[in-house]
Length: 219
Image (cartoon, rainbow, N blue to C red; front, side):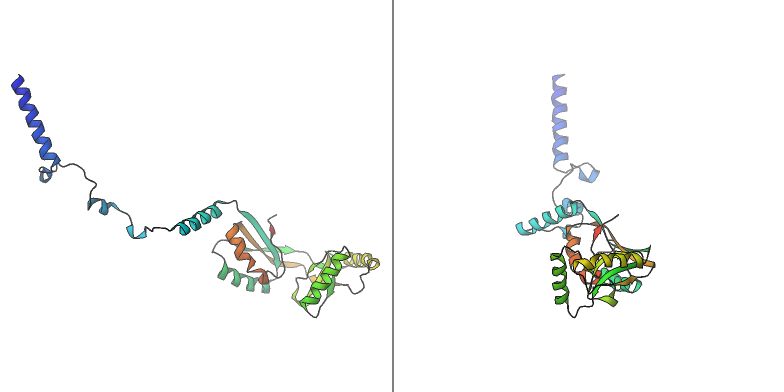
């Protein structure tokens, strides 16, 4: 009995030796190995692997944090059809596809208490500062026909605008008048549903084509 056990142990050791040294590989019996070249064959797109420097790593981390930061919905407008054509062209060139959209909307007529046209942007800036000192708010007019100019108040009817103009006269407003900034009709509204910090930086470069329309939180 003891002799049989010894023979079985010797046989088992021999089989293990042959298996571990891959002598039985031709019969389909061999240990799994992770050595080359088998590991190389298992790699997926090894050419895409990059070794980043410390500065590159910081940039990648900053970008990842920016992308993970909360996003907000912003909108601007309204824009006329002609203004929307120029805006669309600028947005296509500057912003990622799908990050913005122009939506059609109906708006009422807008009558404004208006000052202008000014001979230069410097005179407009000076007048705006003067009005601020008088406690009167103003904003750039959006209708290109009246630019450069300032809007002191806006209303849906001419009568309401004239009433406001009469109230401003005692405050020293002498050169303002009532004009129709836009007619009732269809316009285009810019909407950016998910704005992050990187997109905000690009939007700063688009201020000229926004024609003075501020970016506001979506309603």
